[in-house]
Image 1 (tube, rainbow over the protein chains, first blue to last red):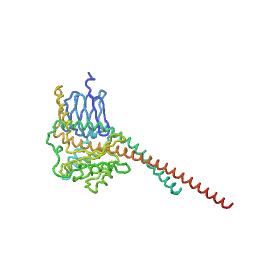
Image 2: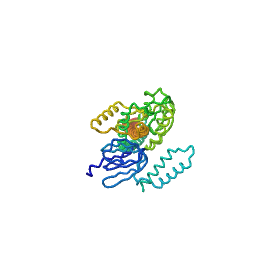
Image 3: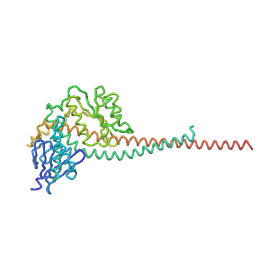
Image 4: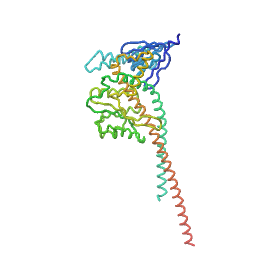
Length: 134
Length: 293
């Protein structure tokens, strides 16, 4: 049975194929909340929100920080069109920590010129990066 | 007939030019290979992006959406991708011609220039709204994001009514096609809407569920179309870089072989002149000897 629970997962970015393989489950954050996808999901297209991407393969789990893009879910195949995505080893923790502090600072000392949306996405990204490394 | 020394000087000057063109050809061959690999690597992404967007639009073609209808009034914007450096044959002027001779020539345009050469050629007759020339050296997706953000915000504010992209498409090493595409409003190709209709019907026949969208279509479009525009701009930049190097390689190749031709005809001329001068000297000596005896 184990074989039948696998579906094809493909993650592509503008400059490389990030991941291609068989997975039994993939979890990520969308604009509508966090979701996990198994095989035979209803065909759906969702928009990505910054968060942790977890791929469950037969041999174990893999994590990555997924920041932007959208996902096309079909019963046998899931394609993630990622604008920005990183493996844990590509993340600079210090930088993420600094970015988090900066974003929090900006949100705390709100002035009319603050681009709140931008600060919030920056914060979300930094948190996703930090979380992936833990 | 030119003197021997003149011919020699000219020959050596052509020889050094030839060395330069040869080196430039080699450099652009290497760069072309790299640019081509980049273009191939990102192909998957654009195909997936294009087919997703077309299938969404195919199903929701009649949707009232701000990205699907032209803005009122305002100028038309053109993003022009050229190179920063010349000596690439007709590469830059072909892109410029798309604008100065094409269907847009009488319009009031604002130009978003990527590449110095295009900017220099267009700034006489059109308004240059922004200059991103530095990005073409090493196009990154983040650059494309910044550019698309800027044009989209101008579009939303109503400063511009339509957005076009002018670049050189890369078919293969020798064929490069100057291309003008409309980015916004997004147009649904008839083929795509037919296909989407068929796919929906097929899905019904097979008892498969049609594609759902979360969030709803309209909101999804709001987020997907900017990504679509960004990916088109990025794709345009990558193809343009490949075409630029391809065009330069061809131009430098023909320059090198032209230099070769000139050198061989000058060598012939030089040898003839040398022989002529020897013959003349001999005749003079013999004539002088005859006069004495």
